[in-house]
Length: 486
Image (tube, rainbow, N blue to C red):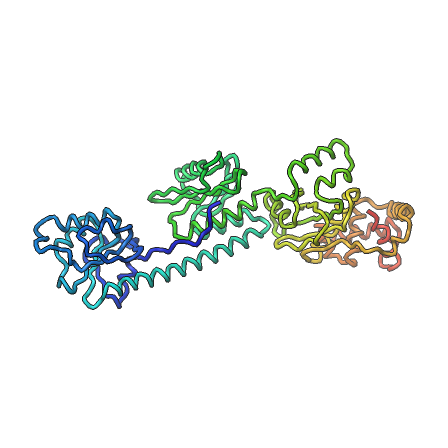
């Protein structure tokens, strides 16, 4: 993965330096380019400063190196051309103590080579100019670090949402002002967000992803490409999974690489497989189950003998997607995740109590052995229904012994079957939920995803079929005793 290091110091716009009234600088030649920037200031009186420049400098000179006959030859052309060849950003000429005015031949050469020429008044020292450059750079760096920090916090918050991958991509696209896309192992677009780019840039970005897609030793983890209109970048996610993050933006600020690197790390965790045991062990357990082995025989391969089942439903209206479900399983500590149409089910070894998860409503079963997995699944479903009805983030199924447990199981089941025989499964579940919520029509409707009038009709039908007064506490107690049977 690319190292999300501290972003480099941003350059200073030349216009910001010229705007400093305390310096009194004035551009007298070269293009008035608002995008021109300065990376640092350097003073030199060398006739050929080329060997000592790194590029991006505001080169400051008092003209000590200029010979008396320089105006009649090619001296200034040679001097300016060497600065341009070295990548100098601008030339600052001090009017004191050697020259009273800027040589006209130097002005002409800077215009010819399109190098900004800045007149430095006598009252302004080169040290003051250099100090102003560093002050502006410090301000820009502070602003960029703040932008990167805010982006990191937003990306981390997005990764904890029920739809983490689209949320991270949306945040990344917003922060870089462009388009972010996740490519799958086969090169197809899995998800994207932000401003769409043209077909040419899109094809170029797709090609760039192949550069970083794992193909053997020495494959780079990131790559970039820039044109006049768009900046492209690709980041390989994880080791060997084949997912790639692509970013296209009209500009690329110094902190953008750091922001994209953080997003790449988060997406790598979200798209990678959360391992609590080897994949081979889980595959072996699945095969044994399919071939008829009892659940208690394969449970040790999955990580334990005591388990809980969690039913989860996203708080948003969107149906859970596989990546969000995988992220939930990783947060709970298990890769054993099943994605249904509206509910995610997670089977995890008993241990620390599952904690509430932001963006999800959870129902947790009582601790059960492999033989009771089916019962625990029913318990988790009922706990989830209660959690949704009571607007709780997490509800645990009650596992404490009750008076009903004093009755032999066979007798209790026989009594329950006889008592509830007139009721269809739908009515039985409605009655159970209604009683568990203390007869609340509204909460029962929420738990069952039906209208409150439907609940009233079903409860009335239960009363008629059972020939019982459901307002009688003794009747409710007897029915609850029966309904607690799985």
